[in-house]
Image (tube, rainbow, N blue to C red; front, top):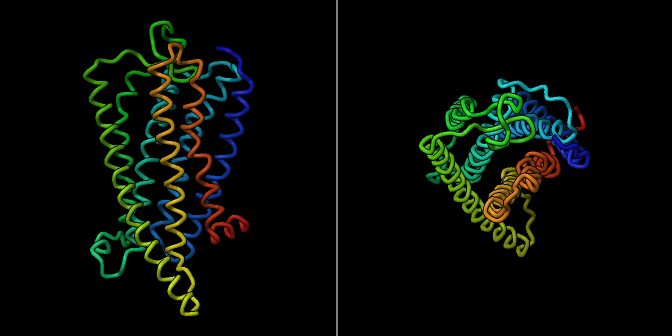
Length: 298
């Protein structure tokens, strides 16, 4: 392994910063969920922060250790767990972000609209939905448990690297395409739901903006409801997610198709992979007044 202190320092700073931010968000939203009115959105945001922490630990710390050229302390089991959790947390990030957008769109929809019939009214409904997301993403990533090995156990000239200590063994084309198809289908379905819910929220926020302009023209005071302010924050969060997701996809595809020695430029997609996990908690902290107060209390 080649010593790269600059890469290691950047990954260490991003991982540490993201872990602190997500930990504050997780503790704060769980505290708000338990001590005040139980809002499903708080539980989903706490789960998103928890997912981000898993991603940062499973991917960011492994890259940091590899960049500083520390001793390889990972065995086969550790490699399997680290790579598996990184893949599962990535899928959970997509699914949880989609669920967050859909629930927020339902929350701000008119009281007598059809969307209100889909509202998850109890914490048990949210927990059941999150459990289903865990099961789904765990099953989609099951192939990694058979095809990931530690670098000391394989001939590295024959296998594809995943980070600095873990390698993928060759897998059959059938297995590869089955799991790849499932991943693409999952991403398409949940991002489609995210896009539809985001468009619906933009429409509702536009109607609200027109209503506010009318009241201002009539010289009446009107305060934006907390649900609409939360919807604006969720939309900003989704824009952040879409940027990092598609930037990662396009840059990775470009490097794969045009650059022969892909490992020399592997850093850029890796930074984009953890970018959403690092930035998203600070968007929430900046936008949510109750979260800011709770963070100060903590």
